[in-house]
Amino acid sequence: MTETAVEIAADVAAGRRTPRDVVDAALARIAERDGSINAFVRVRDDAARAEADALAGRDLSGLPLAGVPIAIKDNVPVAGEPQRIGSRATSDRPSAEDHAMVARLRAAGAVVVGLTAVPELCLWGATDVPGRVTRNPWNPSLTPGGSSGGAAAAVASGQVVVAHGNDGLGSIRIPSADCGLFGIKPGSGVVPPQTTGNGWYGMSENGPLATTVADAALTLGVMADRPDLTAAGRDTDHAPVGVVVAENFPLAVGSTDPHWAGALSEASRVLTEIGHRVTASPLPYPTNPAPLLLRWVGGAAADADEIGSQGGDLARLQRRSKVHTAIGRVVNRRGLVRDEQRTAIVARVEDYLDRAGSDLIMTPMLARPPIRAQEWNRRGWLPNMYANIGYAPFAGLVNLLHWPAMSVPMGVHPASGTPMAVHLFGRPGSETTLLAVAAQMEQARPWARVAPAYA
Image 1 (spheres, rainbow, N blue to C red):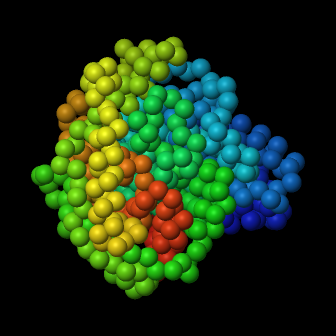
Image 2: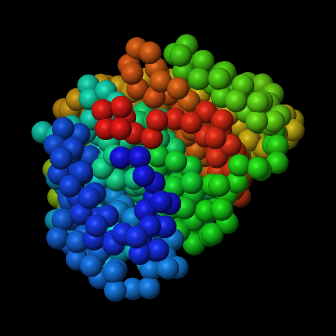
């Protein structure tokens, strides 16, 4: 399947296809493909068909996502569906209403065909639950990433053309990189945020994963109620911008796989060919990881406590999650998360951009190929922390900044056979610039839209 959300919506709006035709085709692909991928935790066969039939009775001509099947990550409310967040600790009571962002997607004509898999409480960089492992369509022995791993696997296997994800420490960008997709995390306040816990102290944002920049921009424009974002995804004539490339590794120990480092070099050449101003300078990553780690554990504890207050059974949390949230409760009780921790880091990165005279920053997206697809939930907290931080150390800084960021595909790793990507981000309000630059990169170096086995 190589069609796009833009093409589907145009066909349905023009009457060349019906919403039911498109939804039936998507449900057939899910039935055929998902048994080996485990991207979905619930498929809404009857409900999606009923929604498609109801949609056919509306005026479709002005709907930007007319008839487009979409997958929603199982950590936001979808009316009539339980919100399980990958956990046996959560209630199976159906949600009473849609999250505001889901409501916008539906109002624009999208049809929710299913809910996608996540690791417990969306805490981890691989997607699995007891007895069920979500796999990467490019290499089933490896993870599609997390926490939007089911979303990425669903799109990269061609089951749907676009999916919702959210990103608190890279959870849109990491799976997008693992699976060869374009994914964008908007900055704070662009899309309605999470409605539970504290949104990981403001680090978590909703956004899309898609096979093309135009599809992601279209979906983000609807999520944000901002048509200018949709237009930016097709702006291949955007004026040159300054991009400062940071090759340095964010941690005191470790290094970037040479092929992933090579993807960064290739992206620098692409940007130069397009006409952008590319310079290089080491990024001043925080030397103290505490501001990020404290928000990760503290945000998880707030989520868990809300689950408990709504009838969940926290005794059923996985061992690794119990440790994570227990540490977080201590953090929250002692008030260890403070605004000045973040503002100092923001000032340092803004100064870096000012000195470079640049608009955007580019780094590798990951340090190495995805980790193995296995039941990480059976392992302890420390092995999970080591695995997560070791392969995906670049993303979290941007969540701490509250800035927009994106993952752009850039080649395939010769050993793992999985895609590689680069990471671009900029100041608040730079979503349109990011999308336009990504559209130019896609035009200059097109990528495979889905994994080879599903093309």
